Image (cartoon, rainbow over all chains, first blue to last red; front, side, top):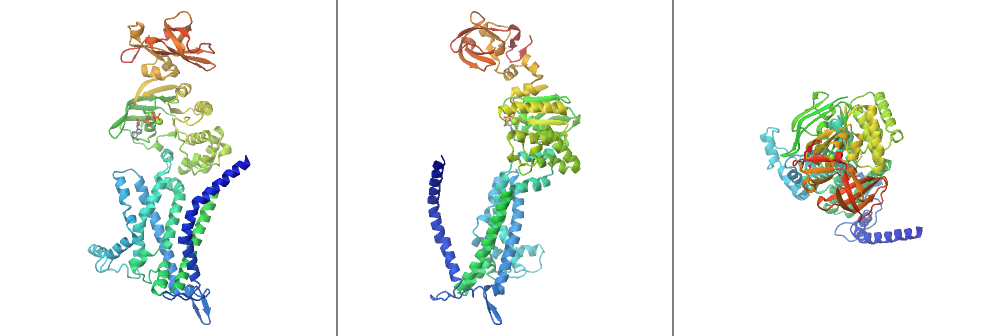
Length: 305
Length: 334
Ligand SMILES: Nc1ncnc2c1ncn2[C@@H]1O[C@H](COP(=O)(O)OP(=O)(O)OP(=O)(O)O)[C@@H](O)[C@H]1O
Ligand SMILES: [Mg+2]
């Protein structure tokens, strides 16, 4: 009996590997190999358009000579890129989650034209980021933009504001556009979770005299929590890698530079493959730590339940 | 404790009316069972009493007070749902006490009430479990516990036993009867199972297609059904109906005889039929006979019987247990 079972298990494991094999090959070619190359080049002084390179150890990351320090970790621009990215990720994901919850709760109630609104709300998410970034760049333009025009007509601002160029507001503009674009995604993820909730315990709540607000915090939120966490992790990983939105909206200015934009600048603009690879590797490490951390946290939570 | 009155209650979803004017007086401390076929509106009536649905027309009184506009929590009711409706992420204890916690009942009072309900329903060892760690019967008891601690004036049950297996159903039925005796609360209980209705009810309300067909004690419904629908619905196996013209009766349109009110003889009787199927249940034997132009008749005999398929038998109805109905299906007094 036991022998037959383990034979079955072995057969299952074999077919599982068979099914996984194509996926593993593709992943190895498209993810593992480039990653390995990137890490490899981060230890060299390779430049674009120059085939020869030398190993420089950790010099691209950090080096301390007498009286000076060099490398990415000593570059104030990298440090502000890290700060910008984290700030962007935390604020935009928090806003998107809060707004997404509100939108999802509204969409989850019964009203006329609900199906239409559900579809319409997806539009910002469906537009490619390149298109929507350019669109917003024009709308936020200080000379020609419709946003300045409307705000001035409404007498909310006295003169035109350079929304994407002015260092004191450009980050806010970036976050605003990201929230505009990504709230629909969050709303839909949360809506899916809401629609799986049992309806009968809400009726029990009405009989118990539980107020809707209490019901939300004591019943709805705990029940959608697992789905919410997954959505937040998804979004946070996305936000930590942010490139296109910032690059297109603020033309890679130092006031909003993110980790990805920094790596791109080193690689493409300054043609320093070594330094760019080192920046990419650091970004990868940040993401890996973040992912492992959330996985561990949610796993220990699951084990509790 | 309270009485409940429904006056001309109607309910429409959009332009589609499902409850067509229901008048019902539920006396204080009565155990009233609403029975009827699936889709007849039993749950809807219960939900109207609870306040989970808006009343389209008519008036609802609980304890003499008009409650049409009162939210469920202000009506002094507690409801037990068919699907239990427990909060999946809360322990048994929290499920039972949730309503009280929010009503700012003092902590010691809550603890005492939960402990008392748990003792009554034998839930004490399960208080720290989650609903998904309980069996169906245990979940049902938690739902009942949650209703008990509210000290309701009126208990509402919507098919509370329908998800339980047969054995557990009988056991829980007995517990509910005992609970009602102890609590002495007015109870409205919905079921489509007539055995549940007969065994639990002080008074049964038979509903069909959004209307009340008859209200009465179980024995009144059994002995004096007001119409064909009630006669056919109450009693198992179902009452036999024979077109009066076929047996030479002129005083009515249809006669009805319950299977247990037919005597069987091998030699002589009023009607003759061939056994086409026999069910041997030990305590009872049900015979299904083809009686020619009188149709298919069912006979229920006490104890074990030696009759089998193909036997030709003579049937005689017990004369003073024969029901007569006019052309509209109303019972004619006897
Ligand atoms: N929300 C609703 N919208 C429209 N029609 C409804 C709604 N709820 C119930 N109905 C209709 O009202 C009628 C009565 O439904 P109800 O749930 O009261 O039946 P029931 O007697 O409890 O049946 P069952 O024994 O199957 O539970 C049905 O015809 C049903 O289709
Ligand atoms: Mg029902």
